[in-house]
Image (cartoon, rainbow, N blue to C red; front, side, top):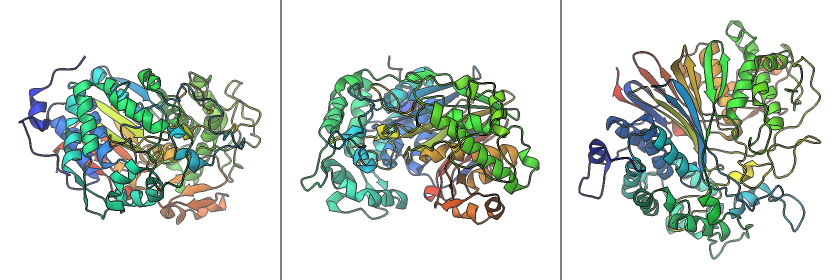
Length: 590
């Protein structure tokens, strides 16, 4: 049932009906803010300002989060939007409870374990051939997540929450260097589809930085949803256009690809449902860390790594020694992730055992303080007595996740949202739904195309209705029952290590949150080499002496975080990653 409009919100947000307010302007770029009344950190200035406007109008964190997400669908279209899905973690100040919504995309009912095996060759499709096709598109969960969150925790309706995004899409926003580079990187793919080229390559060229980008098709799509509700997407006219684009991709006349057809039907959209899940929980040095349970692997893998680190007093160790433990704990947690975690409707995930303190200690004892464990390490045995047994060689993950966006929101009442959402690769499947203004996801390529676990069952193969495993790790941390941190990051399978490293930086090393987010990153995912930012490698001599091998990657992740005290909230984004991200508070403090 639609919630009644708030007069304050209508006056502030409604456009095109005679009550035109001041337009959503991009706030001055800042990656740090401190104050009260609520806070937002997101990837774009327009999205952060949209959330702040809803908070100023009396909206809850959930209301503001939907406004932020919808606006990111306009201004950060390569990362998320109506064509994708995600995971929502929520803290309710009234009850003190952390809850989550699984809005992950699902496999069409016609999907199956060998759907990414080319029947003509009997071999798996090349990864990018599978990505840039309708076959990769999972049934989107984004809009259903927004509706569910507003029903549970919002004051306003979906029509109100979409208004800032509609305004930005119609008025336009300046093309940033980051978004322009993402278009450049995807230009060969985008030229394959007429609707995609029309939106992102107007006049056949990549627009210049500063060009005012507009998306009237997306504005109209949002207006249709505002008028008719989510049924317009999940079975209505918008849904029919989605299915047609999946089954019959809008190839350009000069296209050079012949992509495999997608399997989604209108019935898949009609039957899509979000899932309310119990969050993962571990206690780490007195802090209660809550995350996203499977189908995401994020909450469990962060939790397993923290349990593995618990016996070591990292704060008293030499920094290189402490980082050695961090990297090794990550390696072991990923070994268990790859072996045991999948959609719990299809896989018996031993969640309680994997997150037990005793299992964490059994993994801790495997870490040698003076040399690295060979990688890939084997998974442990959560079903046994949790003894310390040196592992045989294992198998690495073959997943190819790339990017997402993450944002955090709090309100004046003390409610918090930590929300990671995505269309998977930068640019998703490359297919813009004709006339609708949004890209479709390629989430189904998060499945393993063929078995990866040797003689053991692979928990991440496709099946009808199944949700592919994700690394998204939206996280909320409580201390003495009160909010302490909310954080998360994009970055595919590096998301987990980014969140883990920020937690270690803040809790173990005592860094201020700004420094914990900005510090150089390294990501060990049970592979022989560790991906790391150049600034991390430059100071990694002692780690190299222990046997760590590093491969440079320009940046890892783009975190968004909040820290709470009794008197104020710190909102922290990235100073430089992704060109710098955007933090704001309702009432700034000096």
